[in-house]
Image (cartoon, rainbow, N blue to C red; front, top):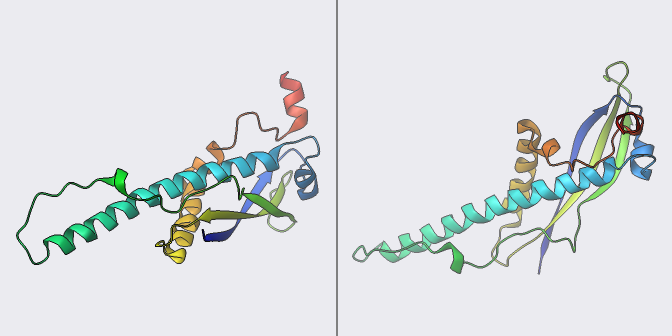
Amino acid sequence: MENVTVQITYDLANDCGLTAEMIMEGDENTLKEGLEAATATVTIKILEDFRSSEQVRRQLRKVRRRLGSGAKSATRLSLSQERNLAYYSEEYPVTIDRILDIENGCAPGNNCLLVISTITALLDPNDDKEEVKDAIVSGVQDSFANGSFFAAVPADTVICPERRRLLQ
């Protein structure tokens, strides 16, 4: 089975002193794992949405071909009979490849970071690799814009260890 690999980058800021190195090494935080989990969750949702819309498009093309020249007949769209399209597999987990500290343009008291992450999706033989890649990129961008990316970070993710200790 063929796969598609997409690299995404995004900015992140924290006010608890976490540097890129601290996050990559998991030094008193689990933010890297939380961001990987959020990316996987968002990717699964993107691919489910893509699969649903692609199945509908494929079914409609079939219906149009069937009805194109002959008499129009009643045709049901059965999505469950379609094969599995692009999907996420834990066999190819999301990875955070690098995190870089950003010095310029960062608000006082914050640590600003650039996260570079890789997402891999498995393709059905008839999937258009570029369409799947575009769906992932635009879906991830949308998840940042609508807040669903950060909402997908697991609740037990330790971001600011000293604040967590104070709450316990």
